[in-house]
Every structure is written in C-alpha cells, then in structure tokens.
Length: 325
Image (tube, rainbow, N blue to C red; front, side, top):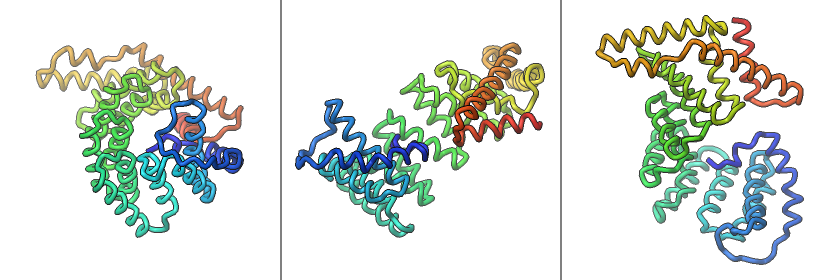
C-alpha cells in the first residue's frame, strides 16, 4: 500500500541497478541517531531514496541490496520507528517461502498491534497480508476498524473499495470512492475509478440508466481535471464503444434515458430527477469522437516511442475490438 510499489518493472530495474552505486557512495557515518525523517531537503531525499531502492531491489530480486537499504534505515531511525517497522514487514513478506512463513509474519503483526493498536503501517501490512492469504473478510474488517479511527485515510478507503469490488459489493465500493472525494474532491483518478465501478455495477441492476449516465459524468470530470487522462477516455470509449460513433451512441443513450423516465413517472418520480439523467445529444457525439481521437493518438505516440505497458495493451485491444465489431 506504499506508492513506490507502483513502479513499472522497467523503473524498478533501473532503480535497482543504481542501488549498489548509491550504497557505496553513502557509506555508513556511524550515527545511530533515531529520529523522524529529517526536514532538510537533502537528508529527506537521501533517506527516501533508500526506501525507493528497497522496493526496487525486492521487485527485481536483488535481496542483498534490499537488506542493505533496510539496514541503513534501521540504523538511522531505529527498529521501533513505525515506518521502518512497516518496511521491515515488507522485506519479511518478500523473503517468506510458503504460506506457513506468511502466517508467522501475520502473527508477528498481531503481537505488535496487541502492544500498540495505533501502529498504522503495521495495520496496513496486516491488511495486505490477509488479502494475500485470501482472508478477504478479515482484511475488510481490519480496514473498517482502521477507518473508524482514521476516516480521512485515502489509501485505506481505496484499498477497502478494491476489496469490496473483489466481492462484487458494488454499492460499498462506490461509497468508499465517494469518501475519498470528500477528502480530495479534485482527484481525477478517483472520479474515473468511481465511473468504472458505476458502469460495472449497472449490469446488476434492473434500472441501469442512472448509473450509466453518472458513470459518464464521472469519466468526464476526470478528464476535466486532468486533460489527457487516458483512463477517463478509456472509460468513455468502453461506455459507448459497442455502438458506432455519433448518432447511434446518442440514440442508445436516449433510449436508456427514456426507459428510466418512464420508470420514474410510474413511481411518482420528479422532473428534477429526469433532468439529472439527461445528456445532450451533441455532448454524446462529441464525447464519442473525442475518446476515439485521444486513444488513437495515444497509441500512435506509444508506437513512435516504442513503449510498452499494460495500459497501452488495454487501449489497443479496446480499439481493435470496436473496429472488428
């Protein structure tokens, strides 16, 4: 649940290759001062780099260099520093061989939390380990407890949303994303993720039009906040991708909305609700065309730069599927 773990394999490999040089350059100073990360920029960069190298080395299998990075952090901040304890847990999990070893680490986490229930890094490591051991309900329970004490923890809300999605608990997953937006209303990636959840969950409801329309609004909001955000355009393309661009997409949306208005009128719904569900035909046309254009250009640039990623592969498959359809 730490940001350095989001490195691509190429980034991790490049960083791990510099780890040995970095370790040699910054030889031990002999200081055992146990203090929080220094507020001085140079010192902050130095110690943050050890954390980054630790993740990179673990990801690329350089266990020796990873251990040296961890030792540097332990010597500087102490083994009882909460953040260092979390990093030590990550190292142990990476070195563990088999489920019994992971269960022992999990018990160590429980013992630590028995002494200090407020150790956030260890709580989060326990959640990750529970999820890895397929104990999803226990992981959900642990996160709910954490969020009860720390309701503004965006990372925890995001993790809980993913867990709910894995159990197909769509309303709960959407609720978690909405909680993130209360803390960070301009988080474009969260708007896009909420759009994805709404789109997926619409298939399991008898009246999908409200969720489908709201998913479009969320994708649009993500693009508004971050022009060129591929995931937002990808969501729009998925939303309208199973029909031709232009009038057919608009016709389908009007049919969905008409069905929803009929349902609302039958149940005494208000005209205000209807208005919230309506997207102008011209807007639908422009969204379809814009998504097609941006995604096509994205692939063109990726091909030109000879870059590869799962994101590029997903966009390529989506556009190819729509062309063949």
